[in-house]
Length: 158
Image (cartoon, helix red, strand yellow):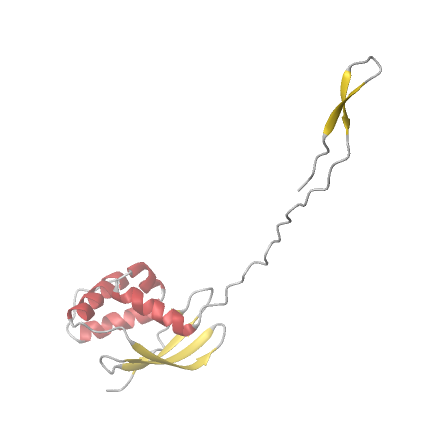
């Protein structure tokens, strides 16, 4: 903050009144301290999986589909068709259909997640759905800021 000196009237050579500076009285000035920008730590693979799971059940098809590789989507659609669910041609249709199915079965999204391996760019999780006991290995990659579930993911034999 800049303090301005106050002025008091004076006279110039012609006798006209002029402003002459007077001593400024010291005034305390508040100094704003800038806090260092908080850097967000990268999302954990566990949080990335939970984010996908929540999006897949709402359904938030944009988020859910963005978190799956195209190869995994193709495999998941083929698995649905092999189990009698036909007419699904896209990730969006798959997410919407499975969300409706899980909702009709009142299936919980509660999961137990064990991290088997995690780096900044790759992770392997072992996920167990607590309500059904279904489980699987979830292989993820993070090419940018978001975790993506890959087609290397597998379900438990069962």
